[in-house]
Length: 403
Figure (cartoon, helix red, strand yellow):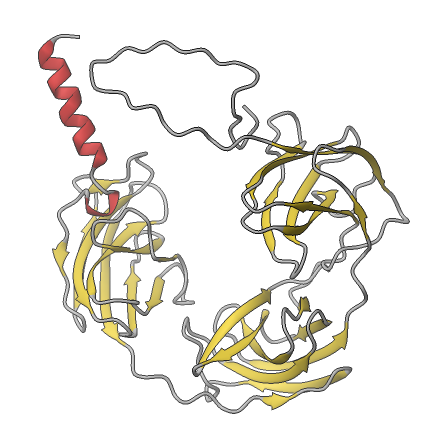
């Protein structure tokens, strides 16, 4: 390479190292203002050239409730928010306004600072005119005291525009129930008037902290069905709401959930053969699944592989205490439709592997392997202009996809 080309390559590398959120000079935007703009050939593109965008910089206070709206008749609008100097988005929205393809992004900064709001196309570089507004939302109304719902009950309700609003928009009704640690319940939300969304969580300092949610249950409809395991004893809050600002009548139910299917014992290093058939138990989503439990030490890194010639496999790794999902995979093995996932386990204790078919009702034989793998090695320093030689050996650490 000629020196002039080397210098050009170095300059290009510096350009690429700039945060994508700031790759274009951002215009200033005042909270409370509305600006008109247009996206086109002269605007910045993402590094892969998948979309065009304009960036706007603004200052915000911690706890300030803000809402940005991007409207366009020319393209499918998309909004993203970044902290200045970061290329990792804090929040994104596609069709949140609920009116066609316009975007609405609601967010509350956790700290004082300068932020960058990106107005972009969802995809493609054919833009057009747009309107972007940024405003401060009023303080929320005090959340009403949740109505009590008892185990085994069904309650009829109605969402209206007069109901309290969630942080991300949309009316909700709240119900509370008490559960013991490890108690499993089924929460259902049915409606013919809107697409139901059920959330469950706890109140902390006046804020709702979500622990789980469900949009569409295991059937083919839009109704919600959530199997929830209480991590600790205490009061929990259910929010009955809609996927997109819907209103109308609904029915909410709270019922005991059956015990989880028993998990077969497994040890790291084991390879087991199994089968999914009509007699196999179902997971919380009603999908046919075999469960396996193993113990691990804090910091252990494991690779789990599931293969089958009879069905498209799917793997889920869960915390053995509260059932929270740590990792999941469909076709990560890189061969056909077999699954593979790798995870570093943060705490010592029990973990559960769920082996099932991607479609949920697949049948046939499968092979499951759980093995310990070495952590990724620290990177070896290399300087511009250096040439190094190395060797890849079978005993070297593996990437997450097993290479």
